[in-house]
Length: 382
Image 1 (cartoon, rainbow, N blue to C red):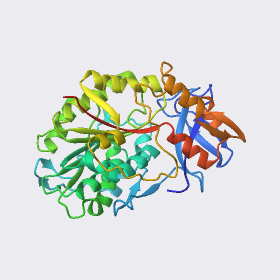
Image 2: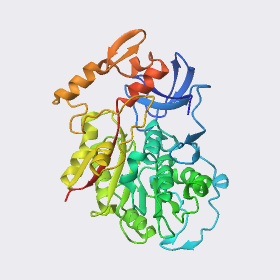
Image 3: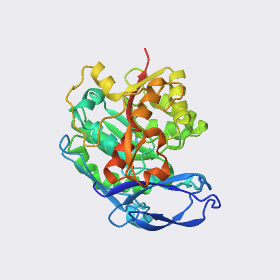
Image 4: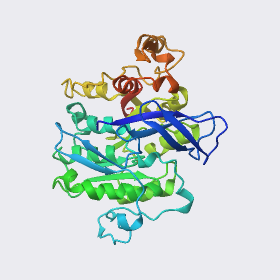
């Protein structure tokens, strides 16, 4: 995964959705950028680029070793129907069609392109779900649902972990979901990787359309799972679009699909708009759920205490209630005392914005990104 870099691009004030502008990065050089439909002048957009050529990533390999013997090969760009094979007939199987229903709904085919990228949060989450720390969290799970799958990196990695847990059989399910427009790429990636991921365990992997808050689609997903709710729901960077309606719809969808007795939620979050994104956790709390750092949940369940060294540094230990909160003294201290070098000068975390990020060396930028990254475990409070 060397060579990938997240670039924050400020949109000129006089540009609107669909407008083009030239952006010059000090390392990657000149790039032509198109403003997404859900952005406007003055906003900041994020692009995942290849540092070797400055181009949008076309395909990505995610190596899950040493904890899992899988190397995921993921397509990350929109494909023609012929490439994906949408005209192929699916075999009828238990709980409905195998594979995915990839017919696109014209009302749901708008996208900002985020579902065609493999984001750093997804890569971090993929590494976590196959790690010793996650074993106790996914132990004995036989039905997994991924929300906002995009290219499927988190869902496929979790499926690989489940397949090696020893409980997977012909009734075990992993269903990866996203908007209809994302299904061709997602389906392609499932087909490309399912043999290596399932490893002869019997675990069935499929894709399905699911817009958060859509009760009809949620029922269809449950039907594909044999009618039972899921005992594991996973996702990464789900709070990227932090509008309150989206946060409420996401919480509603999780509550409708997770088994309240046995269900676990594993979610990788990359904080951006702290208070807006916190609404999701507040909604889940209102519905009776508790969220703690996944590492803490693992330890509480007497999971592995093996320290897995991360060259990028350690995850922030602040709880969701405090991260980035102006009311939290612990958060203020964290943001004031965590420092990085920007253009040769040391800056506190709370002094670094999109413009300052451009002046960071690659190693510092990766570590900076990690300061906003956390993995949470959620479950219904008894």
